[in-house]
Length: 290
Figure 1 (cartoon, helix red, strand yellow):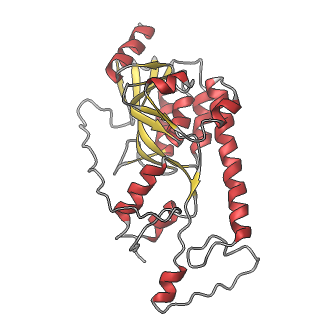
Figure 2: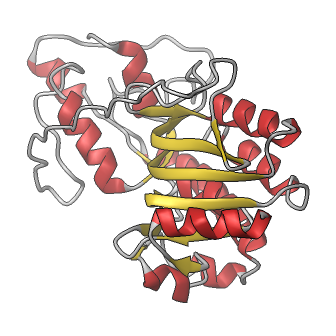
Figure 3: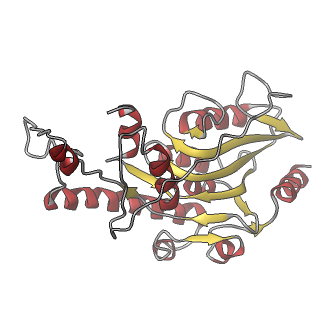
């Protein structure tokens, strides 16, 4: 199977990502991952989809030593595309942003004497759970030192919303979205495909649960229960983190049931503070530090 490393980052690991985006990624990469057919648990097929090309970024006026721009005393840190734990880049690359780069940019901006405030420029469906909440805590714990605003351009879902919620304020455009406060885990069962192709896989393990979750074998009821327990714990961490960051009851966050909210609906749920176009929100931030 090709692209084994990519498959390991997508399947059989918890993801804090909007389900629709997960389907887009799976469908777009199906051929490369050796998947001939993708189906939801309800039995309906997911049609192949095309992913948009990455937008180009101009290097004009950028400081090559840091991964953010400073405009009017505001450090603009991009949180765009699918979020991964380690990307090794200070800026979004190939449709992804790394928690490692966001963290380094944020900590550098906090100590940068030219930076009076920080803008998290967010447009992301979310991504990996690993590394997300440590980054969220780092941003949250820095509150008070400099103004930190999350300005959505256009949406912040799941892991991206966790990051957005760590800021002092969240501004969402009319057509932007917030929410998807939940965790998803996708298990691929290749056992029938392997059998049909004439392959039989035998795992020789030390420890009864060592092979649980492997795509070459069906997922047992016991394994499903254990994985569900892990997902529940991560989901409760997500709920408690957002409740703390937004100062709203945990029950209110939990009751969203990972729903997404458009523009003003997110404000009414306490998930955002105001509805503004990104440029208007940026001018409001400039006015605050003037």
